[in-house]
Image 1 (cartoon, one colour):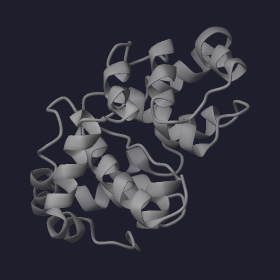
Image 2 (cartoon, one colour; image 1 turned 180 degrees about the vertical axis):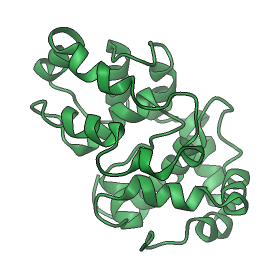
Image 3 (cartoon, helix red, strand yellow; image 1 turned 60 degrees about the vertical axis):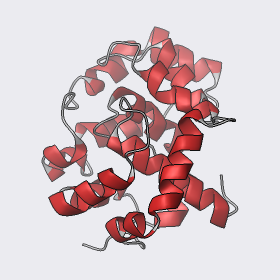
Length: 205
C-alpha cells in the first residue's frame, strides 16, 4: 500500500534538533501554544463518553465547535455517539491493535462519520474529538499535517499504523520526540512536530 510522501523515521532522524526545539517551545517555552492544554483537558473526562472537557480540548487546537453540535453530542444524542465510542479500544497504542480496528468500516471510522453529521463538525474537528478520547490510538489530523504528509486519501490511520508497527522505526521516532512532557502520547508528539514543520512550509491551517 502507498505510504506517506515523507519517510517518517528518516524525517525525524534528519531533523532531531528542530523537532526537540519545537516540542519544547510548544509545550513549555517562553510563549507556549494554547494547544498544550489539549492533552490536559482531554484527560479529565470519562474515556467512554464525550464531555464538555473534550470540547475545550479541541478548541485548544484552534477549531470551534458550534453550540448546537455540542448540545447534540453532550446532551440530546449522547448515547448515539457514546455507544460507538465504547466499541473503540481504550488502553492500547495505535501499533498494538489489528489494522482492521483502524480501517474503513471500523467502530473508529463509523464514529468519525457520525460526528461529521453534526452541523459545523468537519473531518478535522471529528479527528480531534476522537484523539481527545483515544490519545494513544487515534492521532490528531488537520490540513497542515495532511498536506505535509500527503497520505493516501482516507487512509491516514492505517498508514500511520503501518509506519509505527515497525519497532525500530517507531523507537527512532520516539527517541527524537523525547523532549515533550511525559504525559503526552507519542501520537501527539508526532502531530506537534509535523504540524510545526508544516506551518513553516505551507499556507494551510
